[in-house]
Length: 300
Image: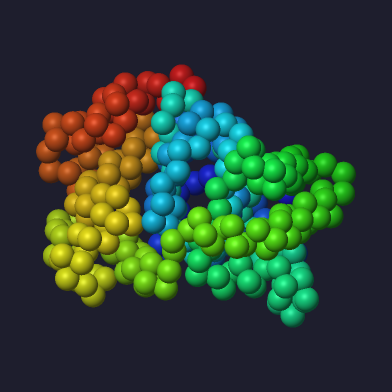
């Protein structure tokens, strides 16, 4: 399994459409340059492990926010909303995304003992991994070794990747009480997250049209007040701010795909009616103008 690179692609339900590995080895290894790659709010059914290798990264996951520096990381359960934003000038992360089927079949005792208890645990959306905590440091080392083995296809890498990740699940199960105490994720959290996912999908499918908060709330079958509360509690923003940020993100994608496309044209195609307003919003998010941003990307 060779090294992969992240792209932004989701289905009609907001899940990532990437194929992670192959049917007989369902895992993908990513080396993300966080200057070039955006990690917006998204979710997927597979497990995910992220290790920050450079820089400082603001990770928002479930109803929590983490500031991670090089050497730290996290393990995320399947189906959990998460995003990441670079807080330093440069940044990289190693990422492993894999199906539970990688380690064993659905009827295997390993699945029932070590994997299903994690998948089915509402109190376990994720665990932060710190090198300062012994078992978490061991987990980080196992995950990084699995990444190195798989990304560069070292000798016997399928066996070694499975062995390393199997130990990771054993460590998590052994420390589940600690993890559950750290997290405040509940059944209500899961219900609220399901509503937010509907709203996010609506925005992603209609960002280039004229839509407002009433439309966003209606898409999730909730009131405007509930919509405002859920976006604030889970995503730490407002529905309209999320919409604007998503429009800027899509405009950036268009500009990257065609550097000759006028910036104003990319903005209009993504729902902005005023180029000057787009420039102001862009600078607030990226700290520079669209022109400066493209120049920076092209020199990397």
